[in-house]
Length: 118
Image (cartoon, rainbow, N blue to C red):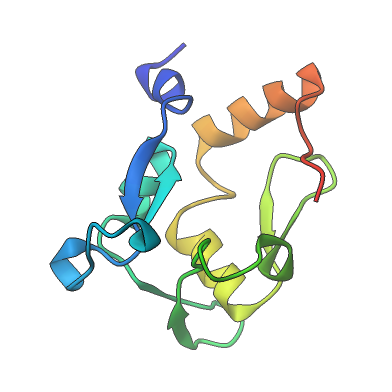
């Protein structure tokens, strides 16, 4: 197993609005994220919706409802965006194209740990 796959299980604290963009260490600005997603997000706060070309804010798990912006593919491996925010977040964080994340999710499906219930 590659080192990247091992770190997917270790969550890290992510700043929804990065410190470099005037974010704070206040709990309301913090969330847990896997290192892959956190690394792809970096200091991004917006992304481009490929469907509309619009630049939109990335999904905020503190203020938005996951199921309003995303759904799981039928095989339970890919996250699909429903809205401009969802599609831009999926693209910016590589949620449906990172090979390690897809492989790990496929194991979760096989083990019966995935799909999550709403």
